[in-house]
Figure 1: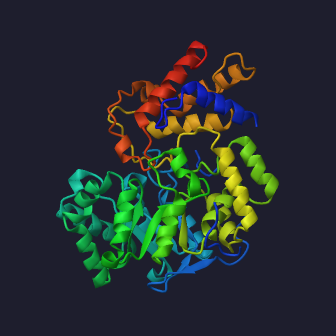
Figure 2: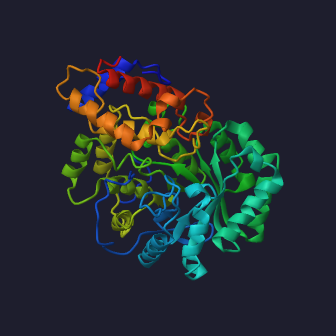
Length: 465
């Protein structure tokens, strides 16, 4: 297999075959659909767990509602189709969340194909303003939005779409992608960070922070200047896989433990994104899922990941992008109230993470920042179908394997159903306009070419090498 560590395809698939056959915790308390591992439930069992914002005194629900995967009219996530957001369902889920103690709602101008802020504003404006906290972002990724007036226009558009006159939690979005040069172009040279600091002083921004992906040098630089910027919070990716293994998955990534510890040293509270790794920690390989169920048959597979993120005391809230009511209900069960993980539980999840690393899944979180592809390729759908088949034991290299023909059929039929032929990996020309935007720093063209080669081998019914 071609990847950043130059592991051969044959060796990678050999590892897969073996796997198919088969965090040290600090500051602990008490010691496609991306959420298929969440079982339907009837509601929360008690009172929501809250954390206190040390700067403002806000009493924030430990469960934060991520408005990234809102339901569409077709029932899928609005990130996937063009049929529009199901506003009635969004309203129902927001009402239910508020009724059961959730008060933190996270959105962005970039979410749900630009529709998330408007949908969030419609749903929340039906409730008293002091009953909820809104987080949004200055998502000035495109170079056309880097000029000062364009970024300020984006900020004012967010206020208008959300139907508010102040933002509770404002983020510089996806800091680190593109390195220090891109950060300076987006926020420093145009004076936008200075503008946001002034807005915080004026009270139109109550808390100012940033979400981090990418170059650790940018993260370290911004924390080194904390005396100047006085960050109120920082949003990081944290889960039991990335806690100590992010660098093993991709050597350019930063382990979540490092990010968390650096924030804790400076008394900066963390907001957690990707507790489920874009759904990968709810859609687990069968033997891993059985392992978690054997540990506690009553708890959903996803709840282990949410409990892990919530157990750390410097975490203010944990975001979950929820498309269906049962996702919300299961998460409410997990945090109403939180049952913190024990040291034995943490060790168990460390061992689980080690087992999961035997599966060479592609670390795609389905964020869709790589889209749109100029050649129409559905990059996330291709990667997610591969991961799904891999987890289910349906990526098999050797035609002599007893399960090969059935796995071959499942992969090829599922591929054509998941991805229209004109949007499949065979159309990738390697322009690499996608990879610079990937928060997980995947070499997307390499992965697409590798998957296409595997598909061609399946079609020819010969061994993949």
